[in-house]
Length: 156
Image (spheres, rainbow, N blue to C red):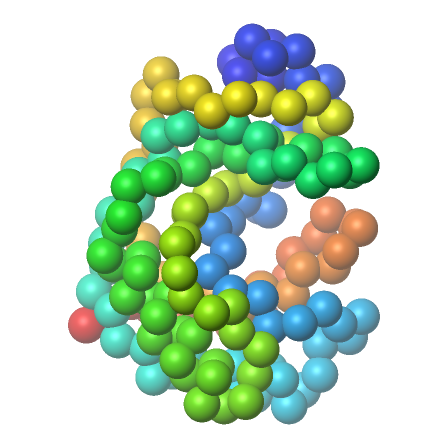
């Protein structure tokens, strides 16, 4: 629907690639075993209750000279999501792994990449779901492929 409304020409990403990223831990051709081990140790310590996430806006995240990420996002603060991100980042810091320093978080899901820029607009119907787990994903850049390395349930 939004693809047609905004004359976006690129196909949507496959459902299997849809996710909300909280923290990257580096770009690797082959994910090093020691990084995986450390990240799994951090993930095992996270204690967050399941929570609802609401994505209620569509827009482009602009990248000059590159295709624009057309995303659905939520701009309202979400305590569950912030708690999850903070616990992950603190654990990564303590483990000596890369982490994205806190600050404002705009949870978003990238639907496609296109040359056209879409200005922010409210979704006709917000996307809602209960977050009940988080995953360690190895993204194969440039190939549109994500490999789930491990997953952990949210438990409080």
